[in-house]
Length: 260
Image 1 (cartoon, helix red, strand yellow):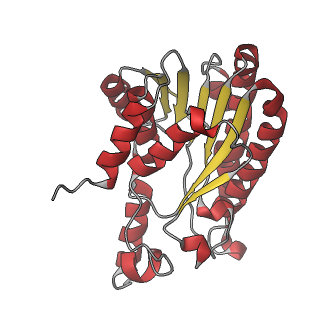
Image 2 (cartoon, one colour):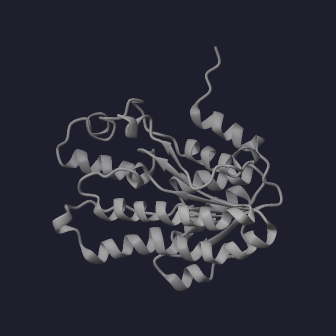
Image 3 (cartoon, one colour):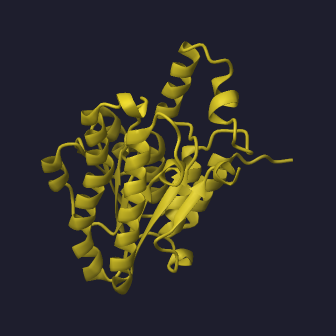
């Protein structure tokens, strides 16, 4: 019996999509979900602008997908303003985590998280929307999280930023609808990314036994990590012809985490 992995199945689905003639911009494209999105959108025919603050990583991704690399730190709003605006598909993916109790959460870290995960997406939407409106078509996909819908302790900055991104996405959906523009969030649970791997290392260092099974996947019915390629497949689907009536939505990819 042939066994097809989730990553292979979704890569194949991306190749069957048709975004020929479209231009996509993906932030946080140097690794993880962003890298998978850049590859899937390129496989679907899009010209990809890959953005990341890690120059070596983003140049490697751009070379692999035949796209263009942009080295930019989204905390630098001047750098955001220099990114391309003639974009049909905008994927706001860049983000980072900081774990601390509410009472100990550093205000400067909280503000930085919002600058990267809320203000930068706003500015990128403002840059890209005129082109989308002019063409009568656009797709904005914001990589949110289950933490954009639910809260966990010790993640005040991330939870607040993702909730804000959800609201921003809905406003873009309402304003974009008359112009053929959709805006949606994808809401992954725990994904096999460097960010999650660092969390697992930190939990193990703190003495937690089986940090994957007993902590990260404790309330997830599907007992595995989500693969970046599965998130990318959802992003490509939201850009395809079968999803034109899907806007202002939050698509959970969490193995049942929010249902449990």
